[in-house]
Image (cartoon, rainbow, N blue to C red; front, side):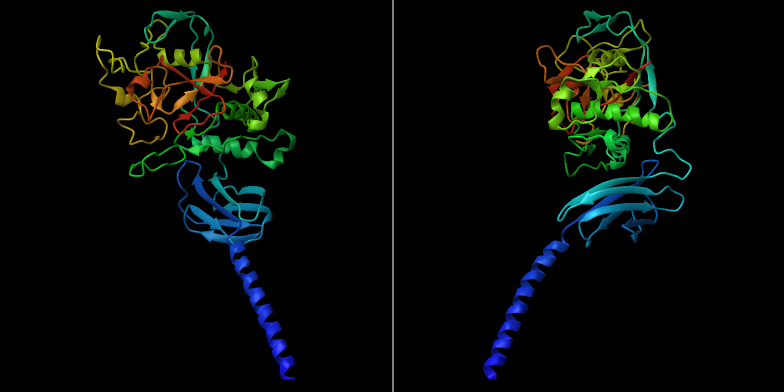
Length: 399
């Protein structure tokens, strides 16, 4: 009898030890799927007030702009974020064990558009020119941009990027769904001691050229979705609109056909330079100057003429940026009213350098570069798949 009791106790002890091992695994699992997010209002500011965050119907009230959800099983989820006076944000997705999904949530007033303005993007009409100077020496000329076009007044902000990105990548779009190689970053702060506090009006960074052209197609379709007009996507391959910038679709992106349509697209390198130089169609800002600045050049190695004393009024660069991007539009605009063409982030252009089929031009200085790179006529290039914390883009469209 005592033997039986001992054996029974031994069995119970083994079960307890086994369960203890399982409990250890359960604790690890409880660290598993996590959903977090930052909530902004439709002015681009961190949301001030209570928000109700629901996951598959189970609600939690958060009293600040950040939320974190833990302790739920993986699987299909519906995330809802609500606040008084604002439209409900809804996101459907699947989450796996030990996966962490992070969202940027924009709450839009009940009577508001989900974007900054009814026109979607603030644009400037850039007049064409039968002939304009090019290059840092201003001794060559181009007649290739003899047509008007619209250019975005500001670099694409992280706010605008994510609004279009979230709409385009939604499963609800079915066969018209978009896919991106990179999710983009909210600006860049390279030094921990930098006093700059990022918000979603900083330019988007860490996007490739492929991401940029696919996003332009998504922006075009979003524009139509909001009822602002009827635009036609620019970038196609094999007659199909390109909606995928991932490596698996790199061939289609790199061989994209830019159709003669009215949709959003990247500027060509010469379109960018014309917009940066333009004064009145007869006078042009010299190629060694920052766009908009007529006080002097910004080439530290040129002692033949006056160096500008106004560079910092027009551009963010390594000496005044605190190693960080800044909200778009804080410096003076150029003569057309376009901001940050000198420096905040460098900007992708559409075209390919000669004999470099996988490279693409980009223009303009950035917060991390010196004054030499602020010269409006200076061209740089990089692989179409590469990303940089100091590079973004701005779209244009044909009039």
